[in-house]
Length: 144
Image (tube, rainbow, N blue to C red; front, side):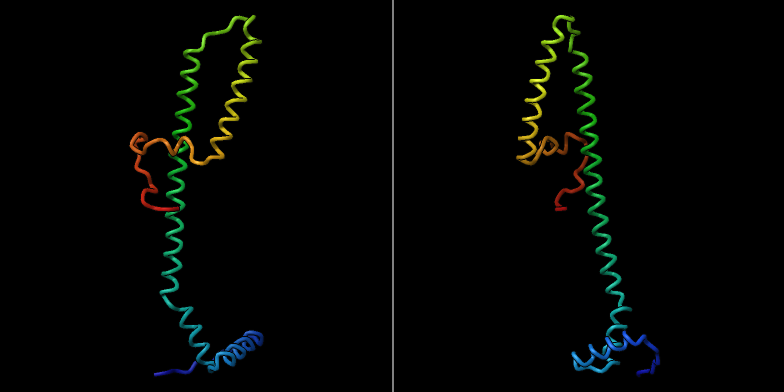
């Protein structure tokens, strides 16, 4: 059973409806019915919600990886600083200048090595096995 619906539309929208109906060789009622059915379709809403859910899940996994990586970096830096401060003896005043020159040379070498490594891709965190960090990889088996 079909029931009648009377409505008013802005002139430009009615012109667009007429144009589409002529191009598709359909009645205005058929075009309007298809548009309303599409708008009210729960499938479209479900598909939109599923897409948002997938995006949020991907963002959650990325956030978990960032938290893990930052924790590893902070722990690594803290461990290095503690180790360095523990084993580095104080220098005599006359050795300070030579040590500063040597320190600059070592730092420049470090920066060059780091640059090469970053160009190659990968990185230190990728070398750390997941079981060492005590955390399951939230991205295991997924591409993101």
